[in-house]
Image (cartoon, rainbow, N blue to C red):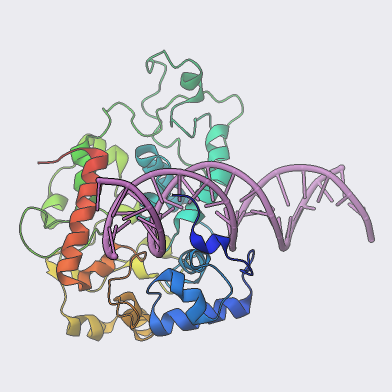
Amino acid sequence: MGRHSCCYKQKLRKGLWSPEEDEKLIKHITKFGHGCWSSVPKLAGLERCGKSCRLRWINYLRPDLKRGTFSQQEEKLIIELHAVLGNKWSQIAAQLPGRTDNEIKNLWNSSIKKKLRQRGIDPNTHKPLSEVIDDHKAPSASIEKNSQDSYNLEEKPQRNAVVTSYPLIHNSPPPTHEFFLNRFLPTHETNNSPPTGLLPFSYTQQQQQQTQPESADLFFNTDSNPLLSAPPRNQNNWGRSSSNNNDSNGGFFGYHPWVTSDGIKSQNQIHGLEGEQDFSKWNDQYLPFFMGKSSIDSKPDVGFGVNQELYHGQQSVDTYNKHIQRITTSYGQFS
DNA sequence: AATGCGGACAACCGCCTCATC
DNA sequence: TGATGAGGCGGTTGTCCGCAT
């Protein structure tokens, strides 16, 4: 495809964004939505290409970004997801509320990779380095099965420590495609009810009551991983993840007061918010925009996560189907 | 005080996919 | 059906800043 036409244009600014530019972009998007990104610079009075504006907004200016340092839980989750998804940063980011793919990618390249190597784990294969060197050897009996937490990056590696564990898959077979799909698919997949959006790891009360397969426990230990924890029974919202402990605003994707385990709350319920004051504040300023009510472009916005699709009727179903198709492509067909 | 180095983060580049014409 | 434009993604580079020497 080659370069974008905007890249050929002269006089476009590059490099770091000034506060004035940020302000212009924020003002424009909060007022009109982004619509077609290529038209944003002109309409906002910026000498930037649309792509640059999009990136700046998504990675830095969006109001739902969490920012700040990553918690240990977040780092562990990133590693676990990377073991399954590889360098699919956008898919990994989709599971971390308020984090961007760029942020996660940077963390991986600058920090996590190094930590894993220090612990004797190959960051690409997630296998012990010794196995990567001698790749023909099957996982040997020397692998200690009780070492549950070789991803605990808080612990410093011991001198001369022998890496003795498979980081994720200890004495269990790798999780199946079905298992992973179950974690990602919304709960309504088997009926015709409206989609609830691809919330982070689907949850139903039935699932909670079921005994998790062994691989699931190893993979997504909901006891130890608050990001994956199911909400308490009879609670109508997704609990704010404990990874947001330091985030007084919670983050847009941190919890979803309008989504119940049964489906979607009404608009009145959404706007009433039932005492969710943090969200209410946020709602006044940004909800119309995040609902895709752009005055420029009536198409649903993309790039804010799939949960906003709750508001888009048939289009949300179409987009939802696309997500299913994408996941199916990646992880195989499910029944 | 000057310099070099490394970490963290922001931004760009190039490619791919998809929608539209 | 191919050309084109736009959005999205992953890899890479650039920049800033703190720290050690």
